[in-house]
Image (cartoon, rainbow, N blue to C red; front, side):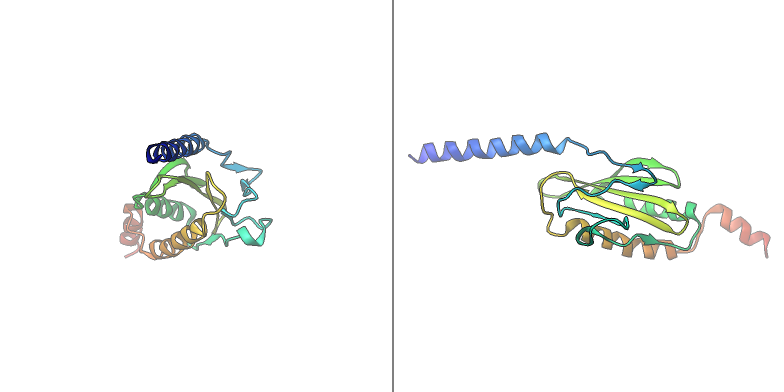
Amino acid sequence: MLKCAYLKTSLSILAIITFLSGCMHHVPELGVQNNRLSPCPETPNCVNSHPETPDSQKVAPIFYTAKQSLAYARLEKLLRSHEDAIIVSREPNLYLRADFRTPILGFIDDVEFFFQVPGVIAVRSASRIGYSDLGTNRRRIEKLRKEFSVVIAEPDTSDASIERALLTE
């Protein structure tokens, strides 16, 4: 009897893992379409800064006052500093997409940034599978917003800015 219960449990777990692994490889249609990031599905495991997003899924865009090229470079550097993130798509000074992998089960969340207009970064973060993320995507965007506000405030120490400073002395 115990052997039968163990076998049923093992087969159930195997079936769930097989189902989930098949879902994990599906990459939704992402990117910029009609000058905006894709809308969220009707599940609560997605947040988006687009004005037409339902309030339950809406987050504010990320604002900045630096040059767009500097903001893009700092955001890219920030994403690269996250061990759980891999940049999978980029269009210089316009768009970044990173896959964030959860530590235990390795689920993937797609996080996108679109430099829609100067001073504004549109954001979207969504789980690839499941229904609820218990607020993970919202917390991730808010954490990245705080981290970005720190890195964008750092002085520009690129060779070009140092050269400009020396020329004005």
